[in-house]
Image (tube, rainbow, N blue to C red; front, side):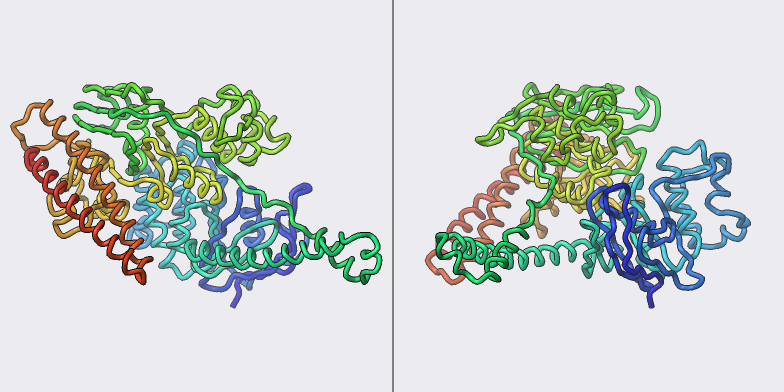
Length: 616
């Protein structure tokens, strides 16, 4: 049974149609994820379904007594009421305190807030979490969420996904968080050119189904193009012949040509060349750091020695307020450590994307902000102007002359990324780069970073993006250490749930012996970059500080070799599978694999020897 039905619904803002003759329904218990480009009509679709916006055409019907819970992107809260009243309404304390489900919602979303604080004193993120908690506490037949993961950390996003999947309510959610989509949705709607394309399954199933549709469409288009070429050739075989052609065939061929679709509009990111990095990128030596300055605010790092090497791609994870942005600012040189020192390599060309984007002058024009970095750039054999690149990034025509202060969050993000990359950096510090980016732009950014050979440190609540573009994960767990996470985000969530931040020893430069390849487990992709010492050992090794640094650099070198050999091994296995019927080729590949495994065994033995000297 459908809870909501849309019949031939159309809606537009100004001259731009957002929904065109849309007919669909939301059934009881369905969980639907909505995707599409920014500005394409996703929020409008939610508002129409919820009954908050009356469409210009068509009809929307709700079942009688339908209870709809709607979380918009703009939280309009009375600033004078306390959090307790905002979230819990008139519920007596004994009523909600005895309800386990309510206690879990409060603990997971607003456990750090004072229930007596006024709503007007909360930050934007805190107001957002309070509004979400209020919605989830109530019972609804249909829950509609517009970007619910904004301002939530990875831990809260994982909890929210599990909570929504366990509820019996129907769900329609707009989000750019692809992991979240996969976790909660059983169907996917794509809003594109005023239409709603429907797919079964979550994000992964949607991508596969869309790729298959594209393959079929491409095959049909190739057949169509072949027919078009034949028809054009037939039409052009001289005036005498043309006059003798049946009129219906001429009209059909002309219609075919006239129906030629325009090139697809898409955001395209250009891969920029990077400057060469030396052996040293960043060395943190016995660094202590507080979030609010020396001795002020939460302790972020406590006497940490950390080596950040060339080619490292590290994701930094932690709850909101744990100090992730402070670590990036430390590396960027905008804050100083309480004690210890930060050594920066001579060849480092740094680009730091902050959350605030304060470095963009709101009074300048879009084109001017790019041209002040560089007016032209050579990409391959072609020279591109700043204007051409902006156009390819979605800033077309007059949009290049918009004032930066008038841009949306997503537009500002794209503009800043372009500015940073045009400056030819070899080290990127990215603080929540996915904020306000739609999925198509996220895919393009991932593709850019996939082929970018520099060093990357990423802070992001977008789990899909984090796991896609980084090779290793480390966490700030509140104990002053940087803890290595061989199991990635899953391990982080497990350790947070188990409260094992103090006892776990995975934050050292190398994991314990059983975690190395050849000791019963595969080589984890999430190991520390280049043998970095992520936390100081509690037990003395008898080595001087200089000897310990040298040994850790050696671990760095050996782990890089193991990573390269692991990649080669994977490629050989793939090649052997493809050559299954070519026995000569298979024998050659097998010999190559045996030789590679011999090299790997030797390096692993050397690694174990160095790790033993360090006491790891």
